[in-house]
Length: 115
Image 1 (cartoon, rainbow, N blue to C red):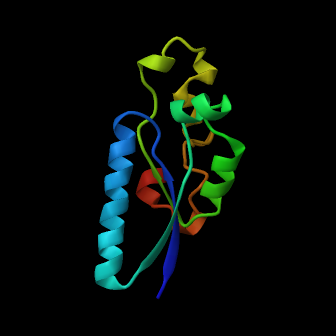
Image 2 (cartoon, rainbow, N blue to C red):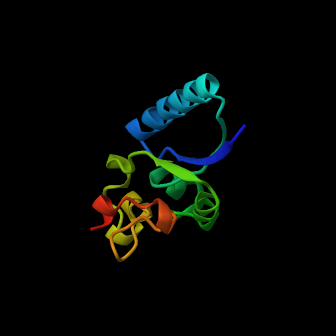
């Protein structure tokens, strides 16, 4: 059975619920089609700020880069709105300067999304 490592980054607010439901969907698909998933949950956004003082801890980024896919939930909320822009939960989003997700393997990128 093929197994995939999936990083779950629930973020904050509704992101927590959405990512949990996405995991359930993948588990159901896996059972029906004999596909295995190993999930690792890592903090990002406000949750990461509360735990580690930064919106994107090094450990989260390291785990995510080692996975086959990342499911990223919504980040942010009123609790963190007064923080400096570079320290807010949105600063933990994984966009590179080129506007692409650095966690994607080049061969897995959809040309329509990167053009």
